[in-house]
Length: 222
Image (cartoon, rainbow, N blue to C red; front, side, top):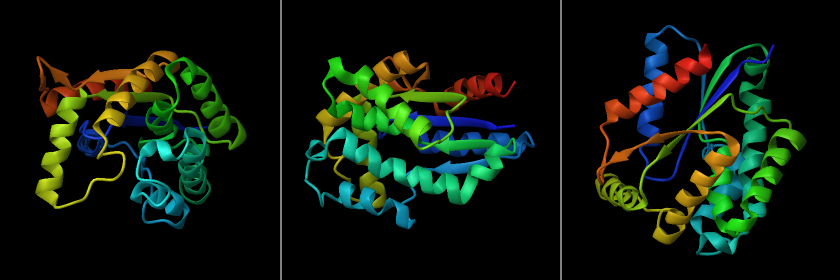
């Protein structure tokens, strides 16, 4: 009997990593056993092409690598993860919690596709990863929606605080704005739960967002 797969998705700067950590702690307090995943798995060999892509080795702009090629880089990492790490647990009824998944290809690679072609891209992507590669479909996708101007401000603050360098996605504000538009389209077409991360032109409180996510997760878990 397959388990449950719950995914948190969001554009860069949406606060997704913070909310993922909070959700993990909430499940631990509730006494729920679960397997946590964070994609991409930068420390693993299966992410080699992703690291080259994000470093700019194939081109300095996200659009220098087409949506289908770049999607394959990320899909291979997920496939390796499923076969090596969490597949058996899922297939035996385990709860799997993922920070990013196939959904990230819909957001970040779908943004490279003309808007009128995006539904076709979403269908291709789901058939490729879930049909051809045999990866599980999520039971719930929570998309954290942060306006791009706020996301960019949070990203720049994080870079200054941690002394890290932005990758080719994070450096491109116009691309991130298109990712958000694409994500909202994907959420509508693919049935994701949208969690608003801003109100009145400012980020919402972390605790408010956490509660909205927990409400959606609780319903999915039954």
